Amino acid sequence: MTRDITIGQFLPGDSIIHRLDPRIKTLLALFYMVTLFVAQSAVGLAISALFILFVAVLAHIPFRMLLSGIRPLIIIIIIAGVFNMFYIPGHALWHFGILTITREGIGTAAFMGIRVIFLILGASMLTYTTSPILLTDGLDSMLSPLAKLHFPVHELSMMMTIALRFIPTLTEETQKIMQAQKARGADFESGNILRRAKALLPILIPLFVSAFRRADELALAMDCRCYRGGEGRTKLHILRLQKRDGLAVCTSSLLFVIVLTLNFVLPHAY
Image (cartoon, one colour):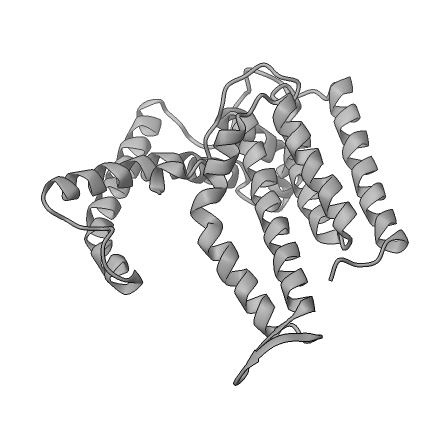
């Protein structure tokens, strides 16, 4: 399961999505998330879903990798859907004690589940197509006005990028620890949920030790390279907006307008 976590990974490429300005991609990723929550009709949500799949095709991201990024979160999505099924009032379909499943609850659960899935895909698309260096430069440039208020913009951007970059690293480390403990007779798959959760506790200590060791090595490497934060720092590549960035903004804006219009034309999905 842990090997399926793909959030934070970067897939090198030369597609039009990879070549977009990292600032534009960050803003458009946030804008897409807003669009998903604005969508109240099934058609609007379907158009939003097809849009991010079309972006994945343009970026040459394998659908297998998209599914792998969703798989570890399926349980959380199902739990959220179950709560919506039981606690949304409406036309009752099944009743037992204090539990009632309504038609509106089922519709809301399905709608919210699909929305969360494509929310994850939209966020993952940013890290799939943007290198950590460009992502840091983009965040640094976007937050630069806060530097006038003595806000540590560069340091914050660097921490956010390193945190994203360390997700796949720690995932791989977790997999190695689990395999090592399985070789010593540990059982992570049998028993009920509580027993499985208890079996995972011995993984946490070596994982934390490994994380702190990697953090210390990274800090030492940055110190050896005379890293002193953003003060007096120059950039090898200056970020400049291109025509393709304007086209991407126009396309995302058109998607938002269509989804918003459909909310008034078509009935809500739940």
